[in-house]
Length: 156
Image (cartoon, rainbow, N blue to C red; front, side, top):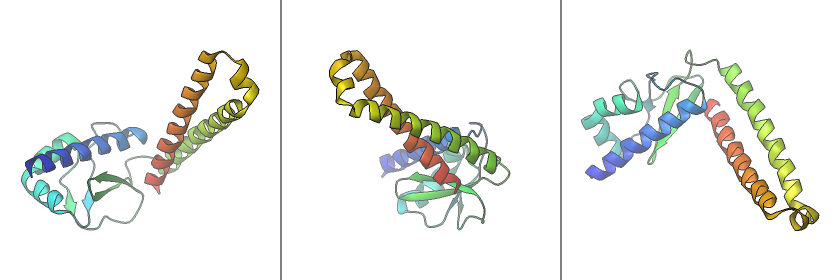
């Protein structure tokens, strides 16, 4: 049970930090977090370790209940979905525009690489290193598309 709680805090902390990074929120910014229906692990951990959660994940005390309406991001820990309001934290429209621009660029580059790798002449005639680099670049851009799509979904 103790390891479940530790793993849960680690996952919450890691995912909160990643979400902040994706949205350009300063790492030290303390954010409010809401958890509508906590799991048993979450309820026990919040009750016993709220100071650790606040310090590690940089959250204000977790509120068990519904989050206020408005733009928010979701952070997952175990089976729990935290809602972190973003009103007043970031410029939602500017952040969406930045993410959409980066997403379009990654999609375009991924499409170009898919076309190149789908061309048998390129794969057969190019140096193996060039083909390998194109595959690695494609994997990178596909990962970026997933990451940016998730970041946009978080903004709603």
